[in-house]
Length: 317
Ligand code: AN0
Ligand code: CP
Figure 1 (cartoon, rainbow, N blue to C red):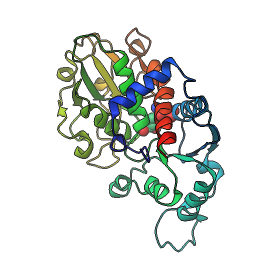
Figure 2: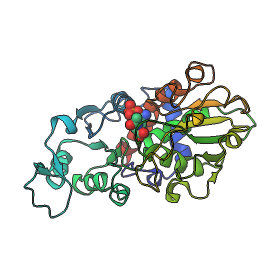
Figure 3: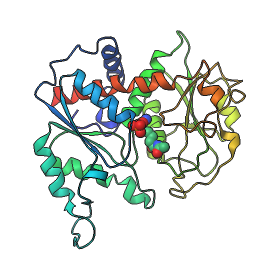
């Protein structure tokens, strides 16, 4: 594994899940593996879980970590090839990435989509230029279209909660939100679920919220949320803005919020969300405070997912 930008970089996703679960039992198993190695963490956008869990993971492996909030503390970067840099951009990614590549063993980056130009966002221009010019392995901390560290932790969490002898129904449901959010989390979750032969995967959302087929493939779409939730074992809740009408909010129907009533016909489904979650807009208090929410366990597993990925990058580079 050279980089970790999507599931396509992972030769054996189930093996990586198992490695994460090994680190959960033995956090310091490989505490020498990263000694003398440095992880650079570059943030172009906010983060709590990804930032902290990846730092903890790196430290468990003996790595040093340097965090750089480039959006707030760095020079403004130019990404366009051939730009005449007379505006507000001080430095081109060609130099910035190449320089950072000299300082670190692994470079990790969070870069959200702008949600204006779909072609530009879906080209993954920002993270791909870091890959091109840094010359060291690059780890995604959520890019324009994918959040693979999240999805790996999600799969770890589902695996931990499987009922023996039962093939689970996993439902990804859209829920309302007041802001236009990226498709990265649902795109990525769909990739990691459709690749997993131990689950039945269904996506439900209002019309107009279809995700890019590149990520969902032949996954089943059920537009009736109640039908989709029927018999579900896991309900993964997430808002995203439209891919078709790119970056737009097409629907704010509060009846899509996840409540206990919505979950009544599930198989006492476990409820998941990547967090941060807006209470009583996306998921009701009664669900988040109830016995079937596993959102905190899910966020906890971010450490072990990141540790499994960092260990692979350290071993193979
Ligand atoms: C971001 C998103 O939806 O991609 C990050 C989630 C991990 N969420 C928000 O901006 C609220
Ligand atoms: N789930 C997630 O990536 O959270 P943060 O945005 O806080 O990192």
